[in-house]
Length: 215
Image (tube, rainbow, N blue to C red; front, side):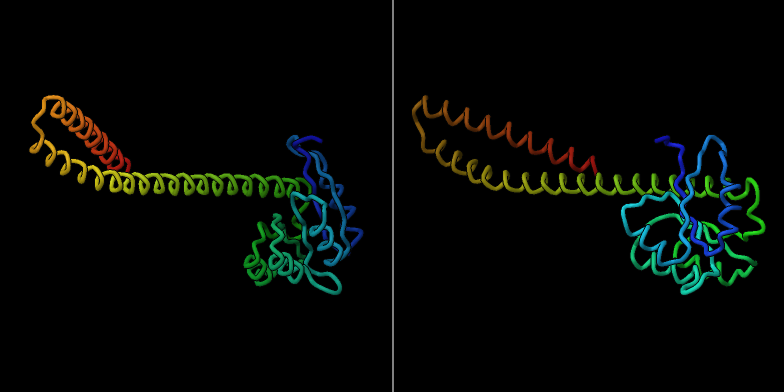
């Protein structure tokens, strides 16, 4: 299947307009359109809820049983995420504003959606939605990376604290032993112990400094 194939679901009870839409949706800017027709909102909901994949929905307003706005609201509440272009027979912007509340991407008057207007609108909507999704994904990844960095910093702080307490106790014990030790062998062992303690303390300081710089 071509990656430039656009699957369109047209929700409209007017069979004549379906023929018109098929005529308009010819190849456009290297894109090919596959049009599926749903004659009412219930059929559309079943298709969108099932295994069918659609890149965009053309939703008419005037339909029997439930108008396009009611169908869009139902899709919105069901969290069916698909770009929707709202079609009406007249310029009733109150309906368009109401539809915007439920996430429609574009609003077109049927008589004005002629020739290249309809396919161009579909392509523009999908490009815009694709860009928005890329931005959302980038923001999501940025948030995940920040949370990971915060977790690492918190772990470093905890590790430094956990190491410092036993090291301090070891240093005190080593100091007491050094005052009580007279043999050269014991003094050498204690000197080596103090050297290792100092080395660990330096590493902890470096780790703490690195954590501070990363904030």
